[in-house]
Length: 224
Image 1 (cartoon, rainbow, N blue to C red):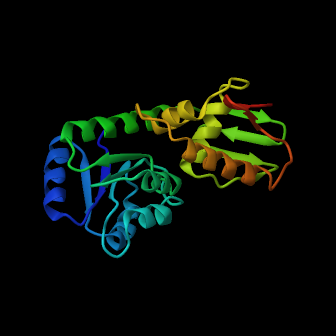
Image 2: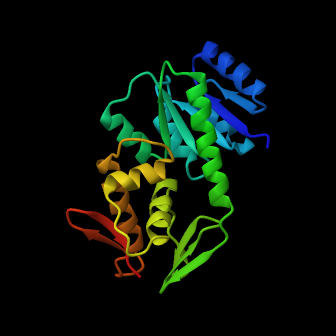
C-alpha cells in the first residue's frame, strides 16, 4: 500500500532528506514548511503526520489542536528537546508519539510502520458493543450515548477501546499509556489521569453511570 505522509517542519534541509528517504520507501510525501501551510494541506487526508514542535508563528502543538478534529491518523511530533510538561501537552493536544532530534531514519521509519500497522488493525474491527445506553462502534471508532456522539479525541477513544474490550480487567496507568501509544514507552500517569478525567466528563453529560471505575492503588477497569 502506498501511504501518504504529511511532513511539517521549518528546516528545509531536514525536509529534503526525509522526502528523499521516504520517497525511496514508496511513500507519497507531502511537505509543509510552517503551520499555516500544514493547515492548507491537511485536505490530502494523510495516513500519518510528522509534525515539528518548534516552528515560528503557529507551533506544532497548536497545529495539532486545530487539525485533530479533521484527521484521525497518527501524529508524530519531531522535536529537539522535550520536557515532561511538553510531552504531556503534546499528547493531550492529540499527538501520538515523540521522536527526538537528531534521530535515526531507521528508527523513525520503524515508528511510522508500527503506527500504520496499528491503524490497519483498528480499521479491520467491525464489531459494535452495547453497554446499556452507551454504544461503541470499533469500526468507525465512535462512542454514542443515547444517540449522542461523545466527540472523543483519538487517545480518549483508544482508552475506552482498550478498557471496554477487556471488561473487569484492571489496567494500571503505565500499562494504559503503553497500550495506547503503540510502542514501548515509559508510562506517563499524568497524561492517563487527565484523559480519563476528560472521558468521564463527556460521558457524564448524558448519564450518571460510571463506565470507568477507579481501583485505588491499582488502576482502572471497565464496568458494564
